[in-house]
Image 1 (cartoon, rainbow over the protein chains, first blue to last red):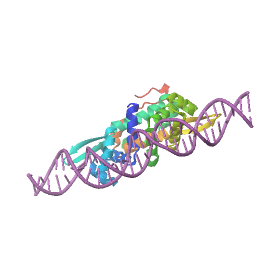
Image 2: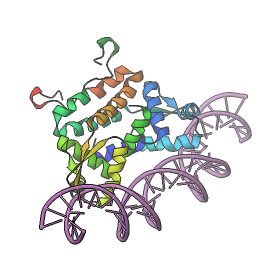
Image 3: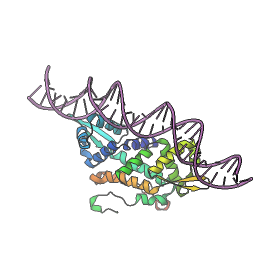
Image 4: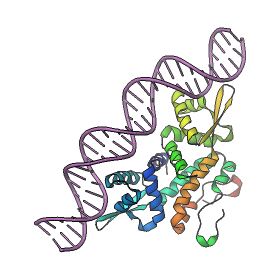
Length: 117
Length: 117
DNA sequence: TCCATAATTCAATAATCCTTGAAATGTTGA
DNA sequence: TCAACATTTCAAGGATTATTGAATTATGGA
């Protein structure tokens, strides 16, 4: 992930509706959600959700695929991971000793491995 | 970090000059940089850099302290770490098994410990 | 084919954000 | 106190982004 891409990702995530969409898609996993379901759940108009989904798509944060009449959107985990790493690289570029705490306290790990919170 | 704060942070980081400022400050560490030095290095006007520094300050991503005639800005590592964790929490909320790769391949660790790239 | 559904595109408006340069604030040393 | 420095504030404008509703495209079933 280069700065250009990070900038686009931050821009995409800096709008309330879009951030909510990404969070919903992240939680819904590989199954994803249809555009209409997203619109309904967030109570925004179809054309508005479509506008925001296009923005997220351009930033590479979501993918789409048609399924019958619906278009299913899924979170792009690679892109999200890349963004995290971009932030961390920055953080650690100059002063690793300061940034260690940033990396500590992970909030994610397979359920059976015991989180190091 | 709540959604409100994350939104503000993403907004702050979604502008080229501001992203560059944060990256510079992160690398410059606890010593930070004077507003004027930032403006000079990035070749933007003092008033413009001041505008962006205020935005970053409002988002909680930088701190400031006067030192003689200069005002020294430093990166807020806690806030950056919080943002990383916010993204990871989202990512891992529903599907930890998918998000493990996001957390893997850390790009930061003390120089003498050998990075797990 | 025809209709209903699902979603996108388009154009217009509204709202937000960025840049600029001039004026103001606060600080230091002569 | 005065002058120079470092930075911020302010108002105006220009540029970008978001919202709305109507029109359009695409799909599946009767």
